[in-house]
Structure formats: structure tokens, C-alpha cells
Length: 283
Image 1 (cartoon, rainbow, N blue to C red):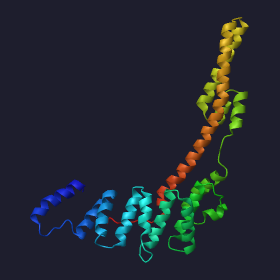
Image 2: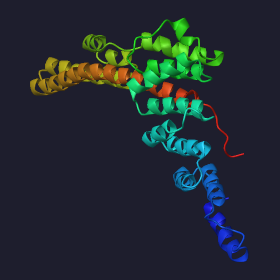
Image 3: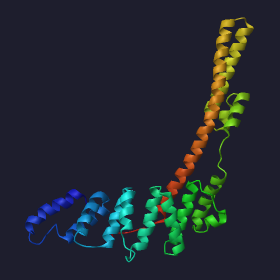
Image 4: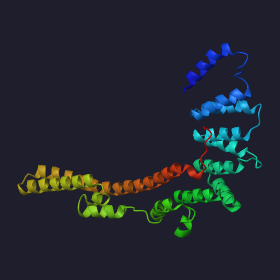
């Protein structure tokens, strides 16, 4: 049901049941806020929930406000709201793992590692979740990696193979050497780009450099000095550009390796919802 339909019903029914319906009552504010939340209109739901909290103190509502901020990637407000949930609340443990998620997304490294270790050492119901998020985050940073077997312990069997591969890629990324790429192309034009898996440009560089070299040679042989020097200059330009381009191609290849690694891990974390619980507030 869309918001327009909801408001239309209110407009139609209010004159009929005016004495029975109070759209400003806490109960109806909460109902409307729940409707907006389940319709994924989180920002407006937050506003309505805040109105409700002005008259009713409710940790579930406070948690939903924080969750709404997190879902729209406003991690600063999410952190503030999750942190406001008291340790006597039934939602306290859930709020702490959500704080850890928000710290991870906001790249607050020092606070993230401190809370992660506190959750792990507290032996709470989400200690294993915190360990999984911590270990995955280590792969995304420059931290020294623990032993591979120890690293994989907290993960489920389905994830161990995937994260084991990422662990190996972190230890030994499949980079291409810029020096090797340049030397190869200096020896055989285009071979450096083929080495960096840029096959199309590599073959093109080989053919064009070879063509201009051949044209320069045949023109000199036939005593066409001017054309010979023109093709020599063009060949030399393509040759030098091919060497430089091979070095650049290695840099691009390595940047892509890093991007694919980081993007793959981030997609994995998103798929796992950063190892936070699933909430069903819309039954």
C-alpha cells in the first residue's frame, strides 16, 4: 500500500469516525511509523518514531530509529542512536554488534578494533559474529595476518573456501611487474602488454611498430631518405610509447587486482549483512 492510499483512507475515514480516530495519538503515530519503516521510507519513519519517543520510552523504537539510519547509510547518527541503548535493555547485545557494523562502514579503525575485541572477549551471543567481521576487515587493511587455519576458524564451512582464497590473494597478490613489462616490450614490442593481459593493445603495438620499421627499412633501401626518416621517427615513437604503455598497463593491471579484491570482500560483507542478525519488524 502506498503512502498516498494511506493518507486517502485517513482523509475519507476521519470525517466519518472523527471521534474515534486520533491520528496524533502515540498508538497511531507508531502504526504510521511502522508502515513507513516497512515501506522502506526510513527517513520519514525515523521522524515519526521520534515523535512517539517524546511520549513513550521504548528501546525497540530507539533501536528501529538507529537501524533506519544505518539502512540509509547515515552511520554517524546510527552510531549515536545504537549507543544510546542502555545495557539493561533486551536489545543491548544487538545494538553493540550494530555499532561494530557502523564503525566498520565509517572506517573508524581504532574504535572498531577496540569494540570488536571487547565483544570477542565478552563471550556474548555475538562474539563469533564480531570475530568474523574483525577477520574479514583485517583482509581489507594492511594489518599483519594471523595463521590461515586460525583465521578461518570462526567461519562457516561454506565461507571458508572463499575467504581462504582471499587470504591467499592477500598474501600473494597476482601482480604484474612493471619492470618486466617494460623490458619485454623493449625486446619484443607489444609483449609487455600481452604479459599484462592487454592482448589487443599488445598485438596492435607489435604490428604497428613492425610496420613502421619495415617501411623505414624499405624506403632507406630504395634511397627514399625523407620518407625513410619519417617512418623511422614514427616507428621510434610507437616503440617508446609501447615501452611506456607496457609499464602503465602493469600499473593498471595491479590497480584492478586491488579493486577486485576489495570490491569482492565488500560484496561478501554486504551479502552477510556484516555478520549482524536479521530483524523482522514487519510481520
